[in-house]
Length: 460
Ligand SMILES: Nc1ncnc2c1ncn2[C@@H]1O[C@H](COP(=O)(O)OP(=O)(O)O)[C@@H](O)[C@H]1O
Ligand SMILES: [Mg+2]
Image (cartoon, rainbow, N blue to C red; front, side, top):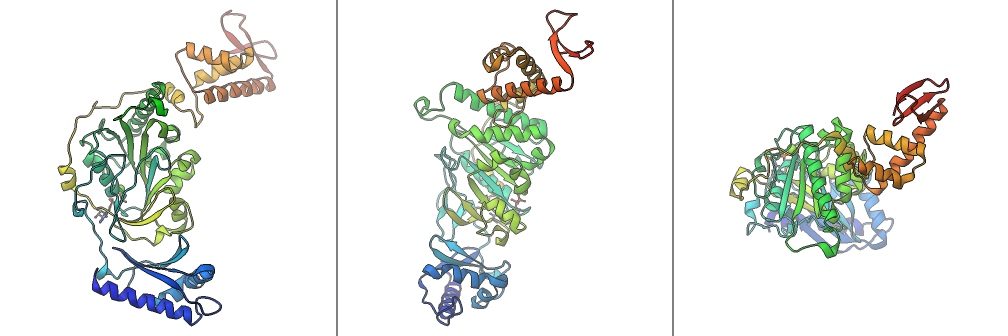
């Protein structure tokens, strides 16, 4: 442990302790106990037990831009406001080290051995005590991760690090999307397990997503999604997307597809790691996406609103983090302050390369999009037309399903239900406007939309 940092932490502890004894932190003097100092790479932490006085202590220390807390910190030059929050049942104070004491880079190659991914995990970085932090893509609590942070905070480097390590498990198949023209993920597109080139245009991104959903659907259809049908050594699909909001902003179909993917991927052992500089735009818009991003790596964000969205809670404050990989890694219940590993081209070069399965993701058309998107409802015009006719014929969901299947489309139960309901709504609307569906007088096999004056208007 660095001696200068150690001395500073001792002084900090003493000043907090004395301040409590003087009665500055609560109404009456109080003895704080169980002090614990944390010598993090970027910031120093001080934890203590204040029992039922905790709320008081936090209120006083954080009041007026943490004015009192600042007087207790024995160094002045920190570039981010100090924080005070609860950590478990203890009060926790955080303050960035002065520049000359901070450790601003920890390389992947600084780890004692090169990490190999085995169970969908990777070493994201080191926590304050120097231990590696290992997020994991699992089927339960964290099937998917969101990497959120302002431009320059270190998202792309964090994605590269994850991709390099995840590519070491031959079971992993990686699909790469990049909303910034490949600037982020281009370097890793030839690693082992990557199925095709990094998708950088909207149409490529949609094709890549459709391919991923098709992969997942095949899993479901083969019964591989229930425990009994699961084989040892089975493949795991991992979608890695940098600045994915770029695609969603241009196109609702993309958002609908992504939503459909993250909502159902866990059972298929398919996963996503999605990075964005605009968490509020990118995920608030779609509740399904938000709910299914249980794992988070939150880097520095620009303001408290962005912090709330990215962290999913008021504290800790991600807008108080620093650039260059300073982060909170948030898993099921735990929040860990983490210095993310730095990787560069050298780390990419040391990793195994592989062969793509194709040079382009297969083209899939609009009709496919409709039938792929279940959770987030959308359907094609043909399907809507058929639903309306089905409502007119009083067919109900089962007959309608048969008829749509006969035309070569498939869809899930819920979508058929929604389409059937929509068909009746459209029919009601048509009738309210003074039209009705009837057997066509001109062509017996067709339905016609007929106005009150009996002139046929439109064939359905
Ligand atoms: N973990 C890290 N450790 C040290 N420096 C980093 C780390 N991550 C990023 N940086 C530095 O910050 C710069 C921006 O990182 P980048 O990943 O491109 O940010 P973002 O994708 O969030 O805009 C990098 O070029 C690098 O110099
Ligand atoms: Mg980036």
